[in-house]
Image (cartoon, rainbow, N blue to C red):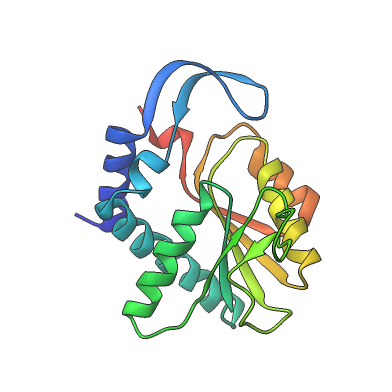
Length: 187
């Protein structure tokens, strides 16, 4: 079984629920996808790394140049960024993970982006997000990356809820948005 198929099975088993829920966007839905229930497991981490790195590398081949870092939008995108970075390292590639906070810390270094202190500015960054409904969390993460001097170039989403968020994200940012899975992949 492919890593992508196994990851989908894991998401269906651990992360997908049919129930009424109010989403962070304020919308109500008859299903809920909490990817962290899958991505924070060891097996899920491994499968996310393999699946999403393969998708990112296909995008890099199409673009003709690699990304310098992978940035996870808090909170759900952070384990994705770590998994992708780890898988890349296991294959001999340095692809640092960055964590993009929902808001900058009000103490210490007052950072909105973690993991970039030892890296160059103007990194070509691929942003990762676990689930997109409206796309606003990813837009906010992209804005914080730009404020930190980095150059977001694409967005990869683990699950697109197919509620117009990926399209809105593309329209607002001008970046290409790719999803690994869509709502229609779930029961």
